[in-house]
Length: 93
Image 1 (cartoon, one colour):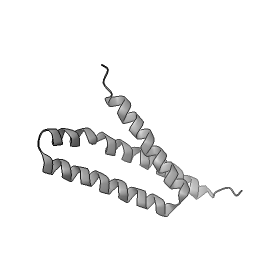
Image 2 (cartoon, one colour):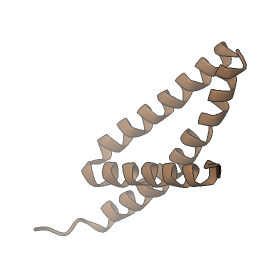
Image 3 (cartoon, one colour):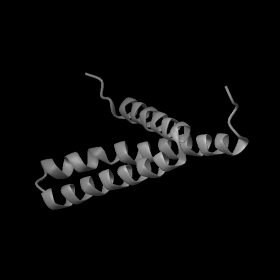
Image 4 (cartoon, one colour):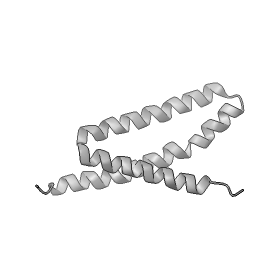
């Protein structure tokens, strides 16, 4: 087994942080999109929803081009951000 080069670790850390920030924005705007749909602002909700998805796809494609380790780190950051947003928005019964 070979040890990755130091620059790969910088990419991995950057992907982890970038994925976390992307996840915070992606899942954080989900409430706004839902409120827009419920309020009948379908055009705005659809536009924001498509923008959210396009940014996520573009970021994941960029991570794919960096390699497996940055892709996995970015995905981990996204999942961690999802947990943070869910915990922050969860309501007590």
